[in-house]
Image (cartoon, rainbow, N blue to C red):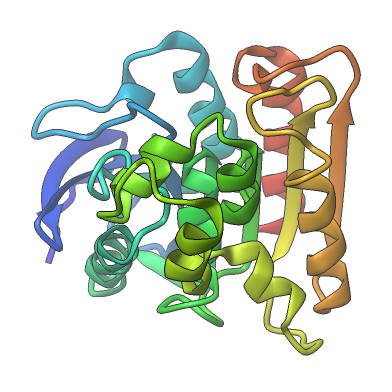
Length: 263
């Protein structure tokens, strides 16, 4: 079990063989339950024994602070095997982090959120649709991948995606899709019967994103979630490319308001 002191602190630990971090807010008290939001990094993101990319870059730190202020919550994250594209090992590592947090007497397990961007979006949904099913209250994804099918068909990130699944980078599209279809969150959501078990979700995406086009990811993700019974807000920002992470105050305000109202 993690041992914490009252107040703000950052600690680093291992869960599922991967380095993780936990950052508690100044209001944290050992005898009072608080919510927790698990963050999922994007490409080239990391967590190691002493730091994480989201604890070093100013705009990322500001977003985590906005989440903590809005949700009156702690934030946590796992290295989750690095550039994983939502593979089974990353899902297992993410689940191990959740299990570690769940074993602590500090966190309200009825108020757990997930947040992620880029390839971290695949891990968010493969966790929600896998080992964390029914455990997550809210989700935020920013410029996030939802469709591995689109990644392969569009070719821009096909090679690193296939590498994450242990597949040859020059594998034909149809063969690659057959191999990773079970890991494609958008396909799973599109085939899901309506229910009330999915988390309330906000999607932030740039209208001009050519890395992860909204037409093949954010927009069909919102539609699939709504059809599956989830409450969804989709914000497509005009004149913004794959840079939602760097929008600054507009995103900070949205994160703070969303977690204040939903977590």
